[in-house]
View 1 (cartoon, one colour):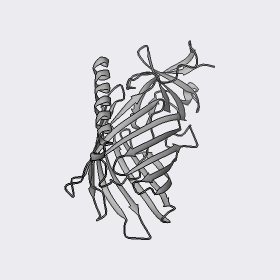
View 2 (cartoon, rainbow, N blue to C red; view 1 turned 90 degrees about the vertical axis):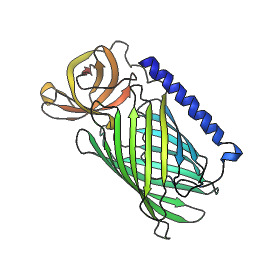
View 3 (cartoon, rainbow, N blue to C red; view 1 turned 90 degrees about the horizontal axis):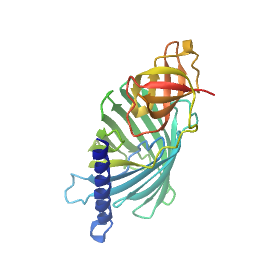
View 4 (cartoon, rainbow, N blue to C red; view 1 turned 135 degrees about the vertical axis):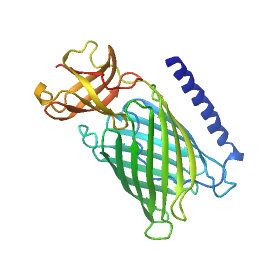
Length: 321
C-alpha cells in the first residue's frame, strides 16, 4: 500500500509539473483571471507542501484555463509561509500565525502581498476563526482588509465555511461563501463554493472545488488540485523518551489537528503536557494538552512523525521530565 501511494505521489507530481511548465509557454499565457477569494492558507504542521492546480471557467466560453502553483511550509506549529503563482492572474506571497500555541481554535492572522497581471501591488491583512461544532463538523469565518496603493482602492474580503470530516474516512466535504465588498465602487461580488477532497495516509490530498456565482461580478470556476507533502518531520528530541502515563485516543478531528484522550484531571494531566501518539508500537505524532476535564483531555497535534493516520484506539503516552 505504501509503495502504491509513493508511486501515485510522484506520478501526480511530475505530471502536474509538466502541465504547469507548459502553461508558462507564450501560447498559454494571457487571458481571463480567476479572482482569488479569501482562503485560510494554514499548511502542514511540519515540512513542506506543493500544490499544482488547474482552474477552468465554464462561462463565458472560450476562456483559457488558469494554471496555478502553490507552496506552503511550516515555520513552527502555529505559523507558516505560503505562496502562489497563477498564469492568468497574480503572484502572491504570505504568512499566517496564531499568538497562543496552546489554543487549537485561536484566532489565526494572515498577511498577503500580491502582484497582479497589470503590475499592481496590493496587500491584504485579516484573520480566521475556527469553531468545532461537533466531532466531525468544523465551522470557520474570516474577514480582511485589502488595499491597492496605486489605485487607492480598498476592499473587504469575506469568507464563511463549513467542513464535514467523517471519522475513519479519508474524504472531507465543504461548502463556503466567498466574497469581496468594494464600498467605493460596484465591483462587489459573492460566490458559493462546494468542495470535496480525498487524503491518503501519506497525506497526499486530491481536491475538487466548484465556484457558482451569486452576483454579477462573481467568478465561476471548476478547480482541481493536488497537495503533495515533501520533507520529513523533525526527529525526536530524545532518542529514548521516558513515559509516565498511557491513555487511549477516544475521538479526533484530523482537519483541526485535534484529538481527545480518555484521561484527565483525575490522572494529573495538565495543560501544556506533551504526549506521543502510538499505533501499536509505531510512533505517529506528538501532541500538546490544551484543555482538561475530569476524565478526558484535548490535545492539539504539533508534529507528525510518520505519514500515517491517527485513529481512535491509538495510545497517547505522556513524556516524562
